Every structure is written in structure tokens, then in C-alpha cells.
Image 1: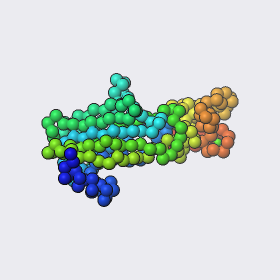
Image 2: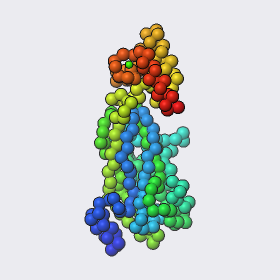
Image 3: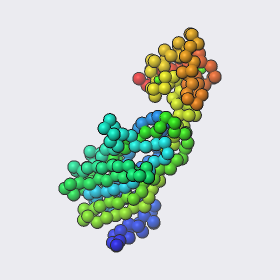
Image 4: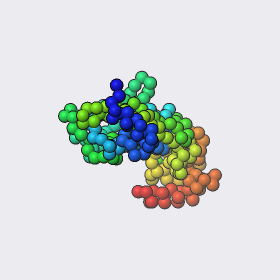
Amino acid sequence: MKTARQLMTVAWLAFSGHAMADGLAIADFSIQPGETKTIAVELNNTGNEYIAFEFYMSLPEGVSIAKNESSKLMAELNSGRINGHKLKVRQMADGSYYFFCYSESNANITGTSGEILSVTVTATETAEPATGLTGILSGQVMSDTDREEWNFEDLTFHVDIGSREGYCPHGYLTGDVNMDRNITISDITEIVKIIRTGEGTEQVLCPKGCLLADVNSDGEITNTDVTMLVKMILDNP
Ligand SMILES: [Ca+2]
Ligand SMILES: [Ca+2]
């Protein structure tokens, strides 16, 4: 049975949208095929003090939560916002992820806004580039200091796969000839070798046929591309 306070929360959410309301949120993010990156789950709790929460996260096809060497899903509470809280994460049969954060001493979560936990996500090498894919944060329940439960509406966030400047349309980094996701001296030596000998030209193509060594996109692989790659390394050591 819903309490009066819960009904008020529902009314507040319906009236105000999500901007000022309490609850968890995930910002839109972009990721390249093969990239692993950390995203934040934010908690706004200006209206109430909470001791525990749970929620489900669904990610678009091709994107998943990364696992560490011990095959554990990579998610971590923000130490600045917790008081001995623990986090459990597991993948459900439908592919979504269940998050459960609790305190063995029923301690309050610290602060009133900002990142409560980070999640390491990864996109497969074969993830199709696309923009505006949908992720869902659902089943949010927060438990307050009186151990009352608060329910929140489902939220969506958008995920773009590959589309950043400096990447070919298939998400591969221009200039990253050996496709190890970094621009280094090795990429320069590869391009120089290709220019000098004509050997290894297959390495300049991404798996979908883009010329990764053609840094200035003029359709040719020349010393100009080498010069531009050197500049990229010097600008981002
Ligand atoms: Ca490289
Ligand atoms: Ca070129």
C-alpha cells in the first residue's frame, strides 16, 4: 500500500518532471566500438535522506557492463557519498543489470547530489555505429531513514555508438593504423613503412574498409599524414 508521502512523490514527479526531483539518473553518453569507459550514476536526494536503493539498468545492444579479471561486473560506489555502504550488481536473464546498495548499519548516504556510483561500460568491436540508442534506468526504489520505500518513474538515457570527430564512420580512430585504440609511435612507423615500401597496406584499412592512415582524409597516404600524426602525439602526449 502506498503511503501518503509516496503518493505525494508521484504527484510531485508528475507535476515537475525529473529535473528537481529526488532519484537516480544517468546522463547520455557516447562510446566507440571496442571502447571501454566509465559512466556515472547520479543521485539527487535534496528532498530526503536515504540509506539504501535498488534499480535496474538496461543498455542498448552491443554495449554492456565490463567485467574485471575475476569476471566481476565493474561498478563502484563513490567513496565520498557513502558510509560503509555496499554495492551488489548482477546481470538478469533479460540482459538488464540489477543494482542493490545497502548499509549494514542503516547509515545515511552522504551529500545531496552528484555521482553515487560509477559503472564501467564496454562496446563490442562489432557494435554498429548509431546515435540516439536507448538505455533505461527502471525499478528505482529508495529506502529512507524511516525505512520507508520510495518508488520512482523509469528514466531513459541516450547512447551514441561511434560518431566522434577523428573517428571513421565505423568508429575506428583515424591514424590508429594497428587498431590498438591509441595513437603512438608504432602507428607512425607503420605508415612510414607503408609509404616507403608499399607493404602492409591492408593495415591501413579498418575492418569495414576505411583508410585509417589517411589522417587528413584526402584519399592518399603521404608524408602529410605522418606529419599530422606526429602533431597528434605531441598535442596529446
Ligand atoms: Ca595505434
Ligand atoms: Ca592523406
